[in-house]
Amino acid sequence: MFLVPSPSPAENLDDGSMEETEPPDLKENPPAESAPFLQEVPVPLWSTAADEELIYAKKEITIAPLVSNDPDLHAPLFRNVSIFRRSYELMERLLKVFVYHDGAKPIFHSPELKGIYASEGWFMKLMEGNQHFVVRDPNRAHLFYLPYSSHRLEHNLYVPGSNTIEPLSIFVKNYIDFISAKFPYWNRTKGADHFFVACHDWGPYTTKLHDELRKNTIKALCNADISEGVFIHGRDVSLPETFLRSPRRPLRGIGGKPAAERSILAFFAGQMHGRVRPVLLQYWGGKDADMRIYDRLPHRITRRMNYVQHMKSSKYCICPMGYEVNSPRIVEAIYYECVPVIIADNFVLPFDDALNWSAFSVVIPEKDVPKLKQILLEIPEDQYMAMQSNVQRVQRHFIWHPNPIKYDIFHMILHSVWYSRVNQIQIE
Figure 1 (cartoon, one colour):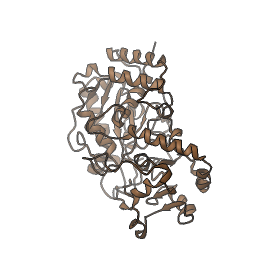
Figure 2 (cartoon, helix red, strand yellow; figure 1 turned 90 degrees about the vertical axis):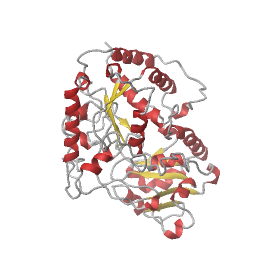
Figure 3 (cartoon, helix red, strand yellow; figure 1 turned 30 degrees about the horizontal axis):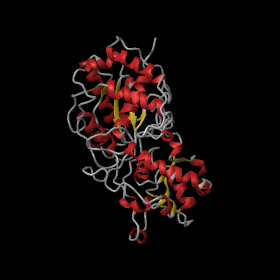
Figure 4 (tube, one colour; figure 1 turned 120 degrees about the horizontal axis):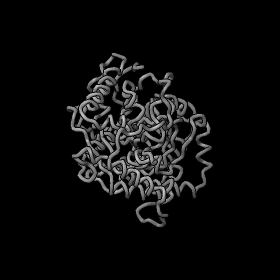
């Protein structure tokens, strides 16, 4: 259950990012009792005023008034803009979150704001510092946040060369056992109103030793793979993986060339791990001038155009899975206003409860990598122009701000967790 081949190595920086280590060897034998789809929600042992507010919110969302021409929300970006806006309004008005203070640094309360795990760190920092949603009285809370870092778990508890993540899973199990013994809140719902945010590839697997944590808790995960029996579609939340180079200036470098000036059809550069990338390189690496597909960007090329400049100059940015289904390139492409082409079967896309990804991205089955150029060329130019414009519009929903603003990535993550909890609540 716990085998893992190596600790997380640093990636070469030719592609402007870092990659994760190969995950625990759990794919072929997921627990038999696990299911990737929504299971029965535990009934709370007793009702609270917060439960009544969730029931009210659920009823209100079902009769959401029709939204038209909202200047803040571009309707094509959303599955149902009316439902999203009503749910978001209710979240702003009602939601209260209790943050557990237990747990010592560096695993708890110690956010990392740089690198490919930045999403879990930025959320932790902004959630713990929030004064609008966070309450000191847990009896008022609709949600309970478990403020630990999955990357800090790996960094502090994984023993290089041990080939096991069991110490990480035991640590998480002991933490849940501790808070469920100290406080009544976990036991009231068996963890169904608790959530955590994890961007390390190993985040899902560290829940394996605690059944209630794995089955009931809302897991906000970058590694949102429905094929492994851990991520539960309909309850868990797909977390965007954001790679930030400068924590003090998270907006640095955002933007790209206008659509008409993007001369490269498709671009990818990165290490050749996982099942998709070697196939991508086999069919397209150095084979076609329109398809700029590399493992490493050659020095002769980087002297003229680096990784970021390639993304800013390409129509489509190829985002294949690595060891796991998630990739920081998806959000990077959005930052640089390049239409992401996502190649990762079984991947639940970020904010899929709200966003209509077909409006601003292309999703291609792994088996169609040999037909990649044909698929892209068959997209009509007006459709590409609309998608590229929508990438610019959706960008605001993926941007971190030191002081969160309406509809930004912090609020979108929190909304997805809120929306999951609202949908779980039982109406008699």
